[in-house]
Length: 159
Image (cartoon, rainbow, N blue to C red; front, side, top):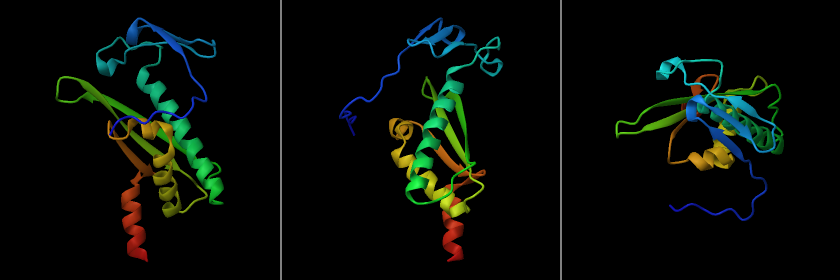
């Protein structure tokens, strides 16, 4: 399926990087400036800098949780005190390149698991990061470590 063009651009972030994974990055507005380091696990020197996977995890997690909060509000569900843990893994694809995969885990203390799983599934259809990655990378959705598909199966068994 070809990419769907946006009807209009609401905001554009611009960043400049130099030196690749062992370099430096900054946004054009000066609000974010980071040193980058290759993790030991990837054969790098480690160091105090962040890496693209950490930045992607924060961006995806923040956007996904905002989507959850919006959907919850519309359905009068209490997603207060919730949090998303985003895990971004990188590794070889087996086809000569590298790829990433994502696991998003929702902790929502005021929601029953079925409601939390519903919010995760709905957010995955609306979140810009999910839409951008759909069909390109594996994204696993969990509630407190349990896959949402498993929650849906157990909820159907209880009915």
